[in-house]
Image (cartoon, rainbow, N blue to C red; front, side):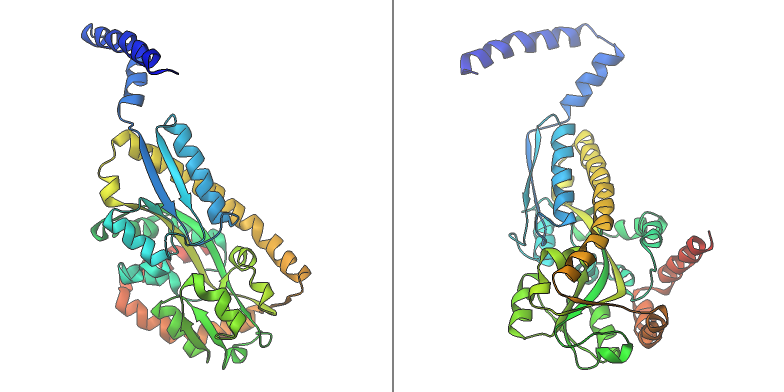
Length: 350
């Protein structure tokens, strides 16, 4: 449309709006239409994640983009960056705090340095199923954790799913607690994870996510641990021969927004962001769970040796790691940990 056409349209429409306003038009439909547009400005929301676009997390971010742009009538635009283009989880979270990036959805593990209470989600063998995790994260405990974020310059809009972490390595099958001994395993920079793997006799090696494939390929580390969709999309099967279904930790993603950005949004814009994060989160969780079974079959077909870990062996591992959980429960605050375990008992009793 040419510029003079735009000016002509504005010249006709704006006076009309002003006249209606001056006349005190109280029609419900007109009031709704007006308020739906007045609070939305032209904005670009920059988001970043460590995983690829093909990963369920990446697909979730695309769904978030679609929903925000649809709900805002195209005024709020979302620009997604994948594959750690903007840095690792910690760097992107710090960018949110500084106000140079608007959104990221990191694992909760790197947040422990800012909000120590998130460490209780890293306790090994706490959750048995995704249903249990949903009940805690979407309930009172998850909400209490989100309420601790604003003082860190962050706003949490809910939880997405990373999933149960599984172990891969290039040495041998890990079926028992003893099989961990001597394995050099890449982990996140997280005290609970580091201590837990040490208790099992492994040699945990913290490393940035973007460096993992090269480290596995070169033999700098023997193995790594991540949820199934990550193992597939990062093609770890090309440099790892064994996959053990340990389910040792359930890891959520947390949907974070820069508080500096959030505080500058209107109520209408905040509502759009909340709704989009929630709807995209449900889509992402469902997709992540459907991809898990496909991933196992895909990796097996690609030549990986896959082994289950029995419930009995998982109980042994849990017992070995118990002192780690107890130590960090005291550090974090026993009351909140007790509340989580009480809620879990209720879920299991249903």
